[in-house]
Amino acid sequence: AWGPLVGRFGGLRGPALILACLLLSSLQPVLAALPWLSAFVFGLSFLGVITAITDVFRQLLPPGEWGRAMGLSTAAFALGQALGPSLSGLAGEVAGSALGALALSSVLLACALGISLWAAWGPRSSAEAA
Image (tube, rainbow, N blue to C red):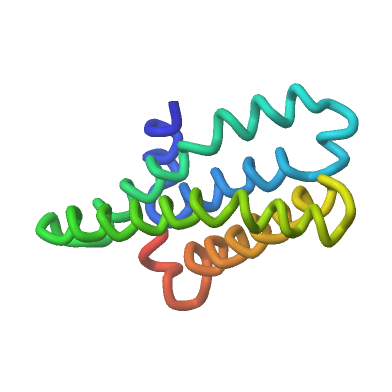
């Protein structure tokens, strides 16, 4: 579902779009007001990150490097899948509720979005992202 949209945005802008959707779906006001919408947007966006990263690799790397880049990104994704539940549980314990885990997730997504936006529209990459 994300392929055509990511391709339309192109380059480093695709990951920024998906991270923005993930961040919006993780915010407490969305969860409190419309939890089903939050779950739907998060579920729809979560695997879009892989599509966007694959698109970035294809645009910025020579074909011979795609396999290595995908292997490294898959390892990073798996590490996040392994550490995420433990870190979320710790954040929830420290905060005394699940809200702590959600807040940590939102903060991490905001950081990732900030890095993605800087990479896409920063001074060095403005010509590459266009």
